[in-house]
Picture 1 (spheres, rainbow, N blue to C red):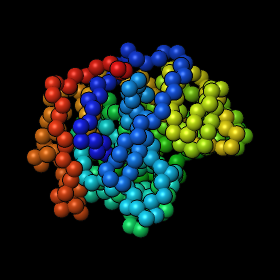
Picture 2: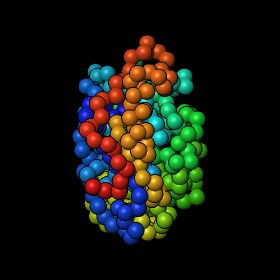
Picture 3: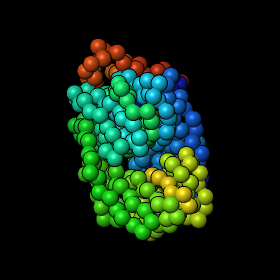
Length: 321
Ligand code: MN
């Protein structure tokens, strides 16, 4: 998935100033964003109030959409630096192709994990034909400085570990939860889990108190920490929690995201996570003039062009506002 916005905002993020060191309960509604002509997503992160949860720096939730008579996801080749993309589906299929030559179909229950390292390009499309429903999330994880120059990589993992708790089961997508660890390569301490809460379920999930956490409702309705959370909304929970109570009357799926507060100051613009203005300018230039990055095979050079940069220099800054 790509940021297809033709005038993307500059996001300056990182540092500890905005991390809530104690438990909080900040609810965020998603912002609807058109992703090309055929898909509307709800962007939960970054938002006006909060830009990072641990190293998680981008959260888009899409569907469930009936795409039986639609093209579905149509994201042409575009580049990334400084991040990992995490593709997670609740319904449907996404055809991933990248500049390493990877050519894979990601299905529900499978982790699609792409590590940009210093640079990668990829395209994501609904296969032809495709299932009627498309429902999923696209997440980005900011890479810490020590991992930014790693070789680009694509991993696909089925059979992820599942944590069984009374009233719920949690699939560990990234990082660790309750001693279970995803096979996806992570570069900072974090957790990403898909928690299926049974009808009438009331689960007490063990958390890492050093992490900050957030919960996104992808289907159904839940009570988080005793407060209702509607489908599509996300609650930021701060740090300092040893556990989290989630209940649902009719059953629900939620995404638990968390991680060690990301101390490095970073700049995010379009599909790039960098450390300063010059790095963004260089990534944009070398993508557009084709002097860096490799093409995704199969598109005859067709690709998304990076938009114009906003006036002024991009500066890394605090975590909120
Ligand atoms: Mn992408």
